[in-house]
Length: 236
Image (tube, rainbow, N blue to C red; front, side, top):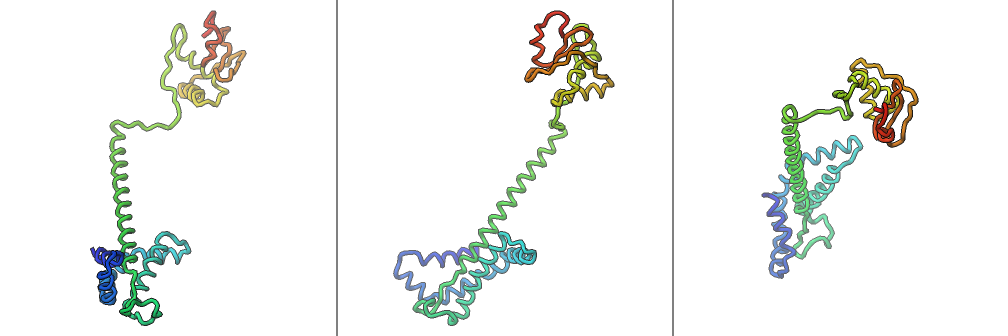
C-alpha cells in the first residue's frame, strides 16, 4: 500500500497535461519528502532481507540475484535520498526550475514489491507441490506399487509332460549366457528356486529372434526362434 502512492506520483508526470506538469514541478520538493517517508519502510524494512543476502553473497564471493537487486534498489534509494535531503550538491542541470531534483523512489519501492510478490508465488507453488506429493505418498500403501525397475520371474506354468522344474532348468540353460533383462530374470528365478541350469547341446543364438539348442535329443527354443523349428517332432 505504501508503494502505490509513490507509483502514482511518479507516473503522473507522463500524463499529457501542461497544468499537471507545472503543478508537479512546483511541488516536487514536497512530493520528494512524501515519497521518502513512504519508500523508506518499503526499502529498509521489507527489502532488508535482500540486502542481507546480497552481503552474504559478497562475503562468500558468490554474487547472485539478490546481489543485483540490492545494488539496484540501494542505488535508486540513496540517489533519491540525496536528491531530497541535499539537492544542492547536484549540478544545476539536474534541478528543475523550482530547484528540486526528480527522485527514483518509485523504482526502488516497485522492485522490492515485485520481488517479494514473486517469492510469495514461488512459496505458494512449492507448498502446493509438496501437498500433492504428500497426498500421492499417502496413497502408496493403499493403491500404489513400488518396483525395482527390472523384471522378475514370478511363476512357471508348464504344459504337456514337462514339469516346472525341468522347464525352468532348460530355460535357464538357454538364457545362461545372455545379458538381456528377461534372460537375467529367468536365470535368477532358477537360482532362487535352487534349480540348476541344464547343459544344452548345439546351442545357437539367433539375432533378433532368441536362442535354441538341444535337450535330451529334443530341440528347445525361447523367443521367436521357436517358429523356425517348424513346431514338429520333439521340438519344444
